[in-house]
Image 1 (spheres, rainbow, N blue to C red):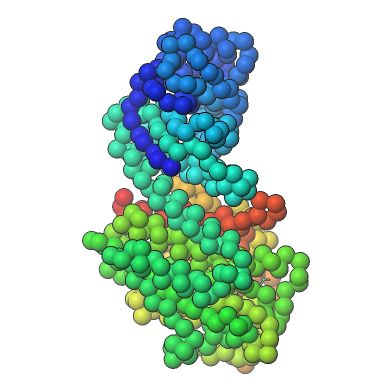
Image 2: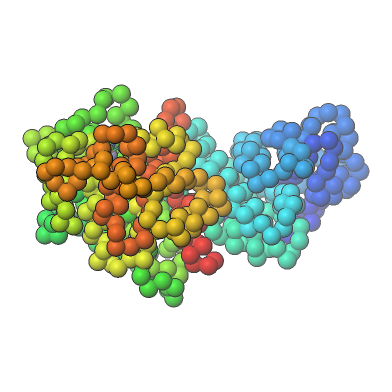
Length: 495
Ligand code: BES
Ligand code: MN
Ligand code: ZN
């Protein structure tokens, strides 16, 4: 699929279809007005006959419009002019793409930018449009199992001075889409294919594709033993698929941060619960317990595609949690890499055991910021549902930066507290901590556990248990929070 941005003269543009916005109450957009004039009032006459009312998402496909070279014009309803916002775009794009995806329509010109009432956000207008187009195409490919016939999409920019802003939006969107799609595809793989070794091989391939600025090392069981990562190892013990931790080092040209930003993704390629086995209903969804790792994988692709001037380290913490004769058990006491001991009360609280050793491991990079991304607790789904990711942090500036990026991308997060009262919930009388609390607030006690291992740097934890995938007939990974964290990195890069 090719994208172009240009200042077109619409009536004489030779294309399969022009896509033009129509507001409610007979209000024409600038483009609609031009075409209406050239066609001697044709569009206006259709509207007055009531064939299109401008309701958001409504549309009408016109052929052989007088004096217009384009083979077709698609009128799309944009709702009331005064209520138009970036949120309207997804609906408009969704309904347009459905109509446009006919085998004989290959190239189209969208002329919608004038809908963007305030010009300085044309960048965001493009981010939203391209993101929506890509999302719709992904859904048609995956859920309807249909091909996309459209191969060239052009955008008309009515004012040439905004072309560079639009192009920046296009460039960023396409890179983010690449990472988002890669993350979704990886997350959607079945767990008999996507195991910890598979994750590490995917990571390795990044260093082949992005030779100049990505290098990858894979830490296997032996090395973990040497490092003393006994909590991580304990979780992997019950599985035939051995754990692998991938360390993806991205070194941007002219990086503005000496101390790296570290992103850690929980990569449980399957979480059966282990000896504390989960109920069988919906257990298949625990193949998504590696969505955190997949998002880190996707984010590094975006960083490399955009050549972000940053130093970033991405960790895919691959592991499988299975019951068996070699499994760790409730009652075990684990000696973590940090030196602290943990009493295992539930082998299903495995994510924090893997992550605590990774949080210690990354100290060697003297990071400025560490963000872990994990499908960590069912309790977070209870607290925030499926729309909002849980945020925990030990640093207010980091919280502000993440919240800013979340608002910009509409990839929503909400901060939950780490008050010291919660600390006693993970006390143990035989070890430094226990791996579960039993006093409610499960998302918080899990984060509280992680906070014990992340004192040496600014740290944030994103609990994506409710937001990483969707269930039901259109089940699949959402790719969250790839866009949020890419935006966070773009802001850091001062792009
Ligand atoms: N991967 C799960 C969390 C999860 C559960 C995510 C359901 C999405 C949907 C995690 O490893 C887990 O099992 N957590 C337990 C912790 C409990 C044993 C303290 C949970 O949430 O039930
Ligand atoms: Mn679990
Ligand atoms: Zn898990």
